[in-house]
Length: 196
Image (tube, rainbow, N blue to C red; front, side, top):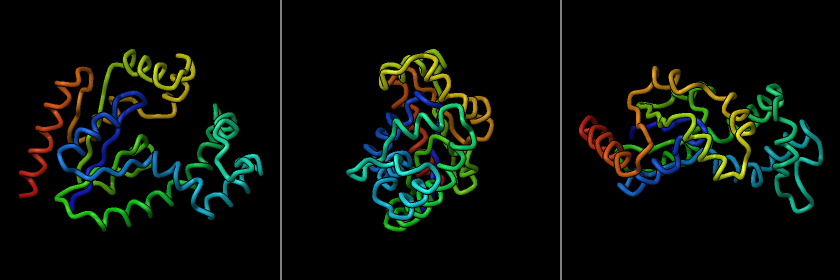
């Protein structure tokens, strides 16, 4: 089975594109969602995060204290690196187990920071989802009830579209949903054709 990495900047529409592939019968592993689940279900991750950032990393019910951790990593590259070094290896292991259970010609691994974490080498094919920065910022402001400055601060921890596109096998320009679906179907057809 081929592993297809799907990535893109914040607000590019990775989740929307993933759903389109999923509706075509392609299994999708959403790294961010699995990371959130593992951060509350993995004893090892909880232990390491608490050791690194203190008891306030989790509330009294054992749930991740997102606002506390977000405040720590905001504009602190070292703290962000520490969290990533704890969580990402666990996600990588979880993905391998998940992938072994799939029976399709290919599966998608949706990861926001595929290139930033040097994970593209673990993929047979890489797809980057793009959209103009103005549109991406507006989407995230609307989705997360965030300010423009907050969105741009999060975006600066990610590669630019130009950097991603240079290392990608396929690019989906996600502005108009109908057009995006056409692009998804064409890439799907190409991957299945190459597989056959």
